[in-house]
Length: 179
Image (cartoon, rainbow, N blue to C red):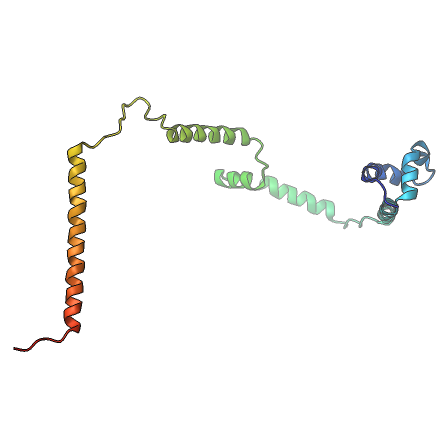
């Protein structure tokens, strides 16, 4: 039988309550819909059984006994830490960045990032040069004509170079007339 997914999610949210109420089933009697769902859904029943077995194993676990010299060793290490010379600025800074969550630095970093974005965006949008009178330079007709002539002259030189190369290669392959 396929059960509704919302019922499984609902049932799983109540599994910790069912785990702690395994003796007298008062919770199941107070919530008959959960009891009916557990009777119909094998997945939720299996999950509850696994949680109960894990909880039972945790109840059997015994914490290891402390060694007889644990307290004296702990106090000796604490005295060493207190007597140690204070860390330098760079070591404290390194430790702070390595082991801190950075919650105290986040507002400053956010402000710096906003400042960089504002400056970068203003420069990109050309707001930096808004006060200066920048106009695009337009070439005169004479300058444009000279550019065209220069391009034509370069094209003519390249064409002459190609013609010279082709005639030289044609002369190399032809028989040389004798006089």
